Image 1 (cartoon, rainbow, N blue to C red):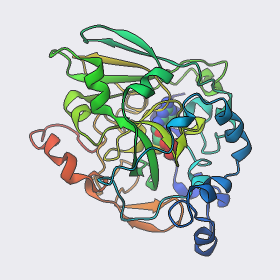
Image 2: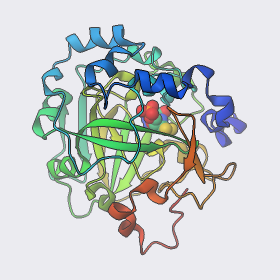
Image 3: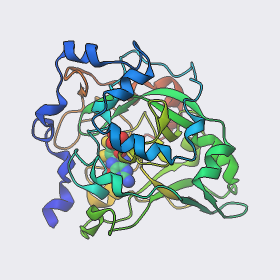
Length: 327
Ligand code: MTE
């Protein structure tokens, strides 16, 4: 148990962690890639889990909301990662400590799904996801995602800003942090039977971070509602932070004056902290963060400070020299 606590399995080197099947040669990639060049239908059609997802979506009460209009402020300098690669290479420890959890994750019942909003708010409430998703206008944003393990992807998320959710929750002025919690159901998510992990998965941000427009509550990807392996029905995307901050399958959102201790921070406090802002100049204790392997090309590219989002977020941290901002 002790060594597991200090070294989560997802922290092993990428050579070990990445199966050959996730590498496509470039020609094949260009031939397969439909989202930007050939249109959405082509991208969806090449998914290996198409049968699962299509069956699910027929019962999806939110299907009419997709695709949502694209927000032109969020575009990319790289190609999108094809959907079949993204949706079959995931970190979701509730379903296993490896990347091939997409099949196991289909057991998660994501409808009905209630979300509790509580703590330091004017009035705590519980809301059905299907109602919440119709309260706030959906949009599509093209985001980068940089995992602490030094791989990256690019993805068309659909959702609403975290800031708009905070406004809906009406926090009190005493609230300093937002704490997010995933479901807890070891019968369905068998990874949660591993009782040396501090389930349920928890993450947190400051109120100032939550008010920044870049924080995104994700309800869909690739032009349709979110597949389970991505953290359906509602997950977070904080693209300037390492991927573990982007908590999946959120059940509870609490406003608090106490800094939340996140899942990986309690597992390995020397290696994973509260802030976890991307910085190529600050190595992880066991590997460099200078470069990242782009999931769909296999190519290594330089990592950028705040994952390329400095303009939007660097000001949030300018008076925090004493904090471990990049762990
Ligand atoms: N959320 C929950 N509930 N459980 C997890 O194991 N893994 C995190 C994050 N959110 C995780 C989670 C990590 S380490 C990463 S890199 C991203 O989800 C992966 O997101 P993806 O599978 O959509 O690429």
